[in-house]
Length: 212
Ligand SMILES: Nc1ncnc2c1ncn2[C@@H]1O[C@H](COP(=O)(O)OP(=O)(O)OP(=O)(O)O)[C@@H](O)[C@H]1O
Image: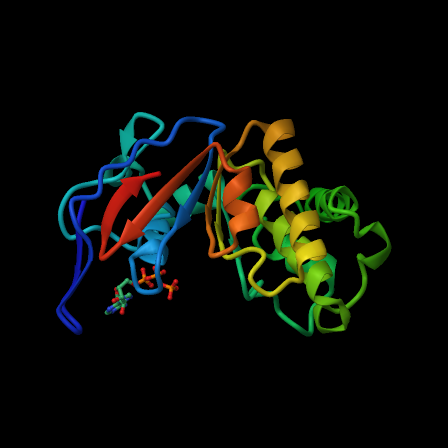
């Protein structure tokens, strides 16, 4: 697939051909502006290629009835900046994205608490997001991403704001969850420690892929 942005006349992805196996852990690395986030956005149906297509579990993305539903059920997103709502508690932040996967409110509450306990935040369920440490916020973001057991977790610089120790803890957690749930993990990173843990490292520069 390729992605051209008319705004700025940029070829952000050029003839990218990437197959990802179920339960694989892939690290996407490369220089700034190389196309890493653009590729992640394509995988998560946040944007569409200008040429070519994305397939997921044997179907073209276009064949799924709705991209919102596709994202809600199939993808867990984790961002460097967490994207939590600061005035809401940890539990409320996790619950927010669970309307599709857990329609019943008491189920949603119970599952949010279970997920926060799973990521080691059982004692911070009712803390406001802006009162949590940076590492704790990333854990809330991970709890939110894994709600509903999505088969694919996409993480954009998940350790970017963390020191080495917190970064290792977050990656340990993601690795454990991947093994427990059998999820596929695709991580964009500048962090060599993260890339070293991956099954496969994919290098992207000027929109072109190279496996290293
Ligand atoms: N919405 C957009 N409109 C126009 N150009 C864009 C858009 N998004 C990204 N680009 C351009 O596409 C290219 C790839 O950007 P991308 O964000 O994918 O790079 P990246 O490898 O993730 O960089 P970084 O490591 O700095 O985040 C860049 O030249 C960028 O300026």
